[in-house]
Length: 357
Ligand code: PEP
Ligand code: MN
Image (tube, rainbow, N blue to C red; front, top):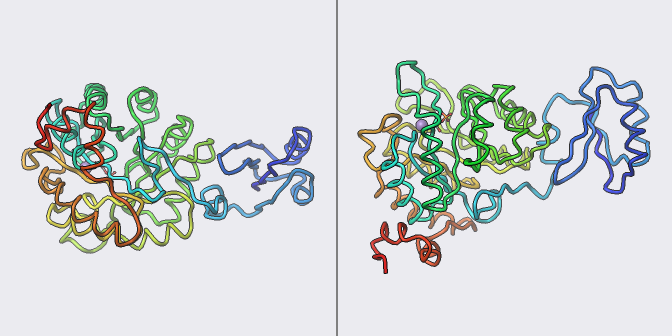
């Protein structure tokens, strides 16, 4: 059972409710205070509904409750750098699949920053299908992310694969990615929940939308509602693309949950030539942002080169997607917007060809 407390609930009232619930857990989120019965039975369950201080009770817990739309009708916005993901402004998280070296990441970051990216992506810990494939620079990758973040001012999104990785990310990382293959790594979900930072939760390639929302519920139950859901393509019979990007997920998730939803057209297609059209489609479908792979030299990338955009293609993506954003009442930040803050960012000016004076 999940009990939602009234804003006015007093300590004595809360104590009384706690005593009626089996294995109670208190969860405080920006949109409400809850007491959750984690046990199998609630000794005084039936009467709780009428106790003072109780706003409402959900007895059936077969689906998500804290992540469900009803828990926060106003919608959740997740701060990531200067963007509130889930608001009018669209998040554009761009950068290479993996952090390979400082030059590679710095080049990509300066360019995407100059053209309006709102956050930098880059994996230091890489989940790879083959154990012989490049596994990421690990701690060395985090150090490079830290350096590039300081140079460009871009907030950093990177993947944690194990709960232990989460602690290492405390100082550098602004948003922790839980990758598609880890969507049901429950100890990891609890760890990112406890970290209290924004989480980018990617849909598993064979997971339903309700399983994705229940994975998010694991994070919320730890007291962290800063979860961004990500559609990144699912496995189907189609082999022409790496995955099938399920854009149905966008309106369906938006109706079922209050959490922001973004789309990854890079992993969703696996083909560089399909990324820009599907980024446009994602924004048209109502996504709160996109995450795309961009590499200064994609043909030499150590991972996911086939689906990584060149720098020029990223510029094209921004130009074309901006038009779609405007058509659906959303906003994509412009190179001009970055220009105003370029005084502190000579690198961005250089990338735009504006010189350094
Ligand atoms: C990635 O973002 O590089 C990645 C591995 O994504 P996914 O977990 O969606 O496959
Ligand atoms: Mn990748």
